[in-house]
Length: 260
Image (cartoon, rainbow, N blue to C red; front, side, top):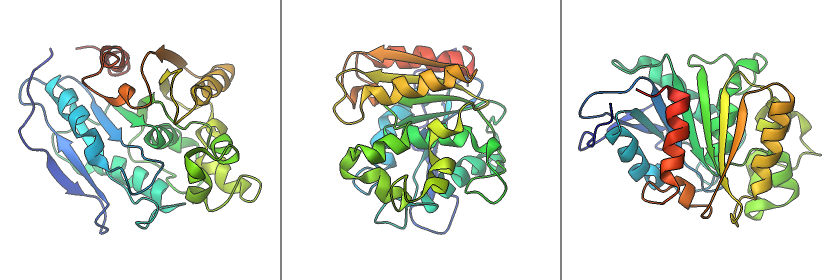
């Protein structure tokens, strides 16, 4: 059942001691659908965009009956970078296990832009070697919605996307730090034990459409459940609950979480 309202104010929870280590829990006011949605914002892992960029998306999803967890994390210039940003993404998701009355049996990550990188990476944590950032997850991810996501981190670094943001995140380029990229690059982690849906517009002038094309082709070639949904619009419309694209995003999310 779909509800039309959410609680008026989200509940903020801190999963660490840094001011950026928090997430806002949006609870439906009425009947809940099964599962929990984790939102991860973009902004090239930098300080100019925060979790508030997805506040309207969080409210929309909660209004449709989904418990929604809108994550902030340490970003570049604010204590972020490798491995801190990855560790925060992992810790924020695992913190769900400490919250009462939150369904952790089926958790789907939804990430926009650089947040799409973290959303897909988090779903592959079960394959990380012990000691790697984010290894040994408490919460396992059932599905991923990448909204114009950076899924080929090495290509992003080589192509200087976001004015060199990927190399800044990682502390260098793939040739200098191949072991780091092997851990952090979603493309290098396929296949992962989660269904991935990539929503991307050909007209995206921030994150190339090819990022999703390359990831889905590699994932499917490795036997993973992955699909690309090409949509109209631009880089930001795929993460805008008021855009004409949004119903297509909701349809894919319903499939990942199980329509109810």
